[in-house]
Image (cartoon, rainbow, N blue to C red; front, side):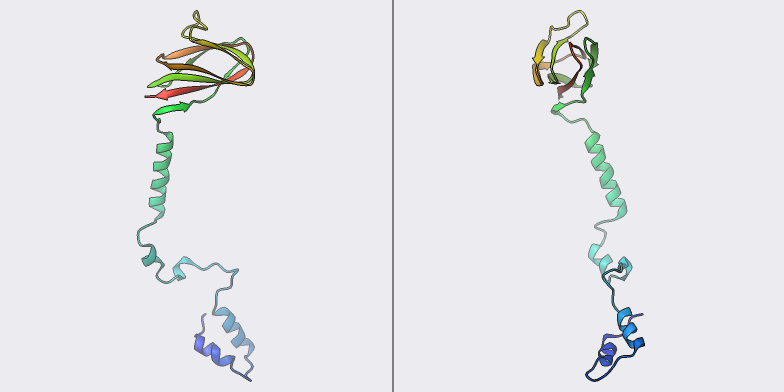
Length: 161
């Protein structure tokens, strides 16, 4: 329970000795640095904040940001990497409204890219010693076929229309 400041001052005047009860009352009248101050005890906080920030508005904002992060972006962008095993022929389907721009090869490999199983290499080939990029321009296909002589990771770089 808080004790009025002027009352406490009277207990600590010159040549007076406060009692234990007075000393404790003084300590109990203030917030200690280790104590949490309840939000409800902060006078005028609701008026200061007004309706600016509520849990509901923050939740709605977080959902909006997540929606924007998951929305397809336009322009050139890296897509999810494709793991390719040695000598495996793999078909990769492009996302809807995407055109293939380039392929980034992570690792040492000889990579061939084609528009079908029988035309492997017709879109291009690359010899990568560590990291290489096979630039294709803007290829408008639904899928491509990939084949490499070693295990390799390939990151498609696509253009979203």
